[in-house]
Image 1: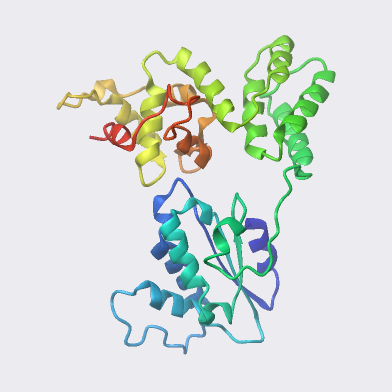
Image 2: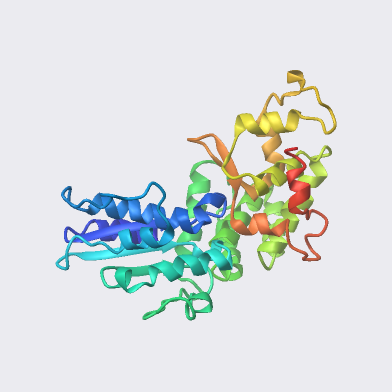
Length: 327
C-alpha cells in the first residue's frame, strides 16, 4: 500500500490522503485516530480561504470528522483515500470506520482503496460498497524475487555463510516451495537457517521446514526457552503484548530489573547488555535501530501467545497475566 501512495503522489493532478493501521500501536486502531488523521490531511489540502473550523466546537465527533473528509479541492482533481490494515481493528471499530467512510459525502469526492490480509469481502460486503476486489494469489510470484533478494542480502552482510554454492540453490528451492505466499514465513526460516553453523545443520533445517507460522513460532520458542533459564523472553513478550507504544531499550532494562513483590528498586539489577537478553526472543521481535525501540515482528506473533492453540499452550498467557509484569 505504501508503494501505491508513493505512485499516486507523483501525479500532479491527484490528491492523496492515507492511514496505516498498526497492530503494535493500539491507538492507530481506533476510529477517532483513523478518521482524525484523514481529516487532518484533508484540511491541509484545502485552500487557505476555506474556514473549515469557523465556529467549530472544541470537541469534534466522528460525524464531523467524516464531514471534513468529504471536502474536496474540486472536481477537476483526482482524490484518493487509502487505508491499510483495517483487519487489525476490532469488529466494532472496523464497522464504525467503514460506516463513516462509506457516506455519500465522502464517496462522492474520493476514490477509496482498502487493503487487508484476508478476503476484503469477508468484512466489507455488509459495511461498505465494494465495487472492485483484487486478491493476491497464494502462489505469489513476488515470493521468488523476495527469496532471491533476501538470500543475496544475507550473503553480503555475512549473516549467511556457506562454502558450497550449491547449498544456496537448495535453500532457495525449499523456501519457495514451502512459502505458500507468506513473506513472513520466508524471513523467519532464513533467520533459523542463518543461525546454523554448518552445511549439515542448514540442510537438516531445510529438510524439515515448519508448515505454517504457528509451527515456526513453536520452533523458535523451543530453541530460545532452552537457553533462557530465567525466562527473560517471556517477561519481555508479556509487556509487548499490553503496552500502547513501542518499548524502548531503556524501558526493557527497567522492566527486567524489577523483582515481583519487591517494593524497593535496586539500580544494580539493571541489565548491562540488553541486546544479549533480546536475543532470547529470537525472531519474534523487531528492533527499530533508528528509534531504539522494539515490537512484535508481526501481529500473529502477539496473537500466538493469547490463543488456545494446543501448540502454543506452553507459552500462552492472559492479558491479566501480561499486565502483572507492569504492576
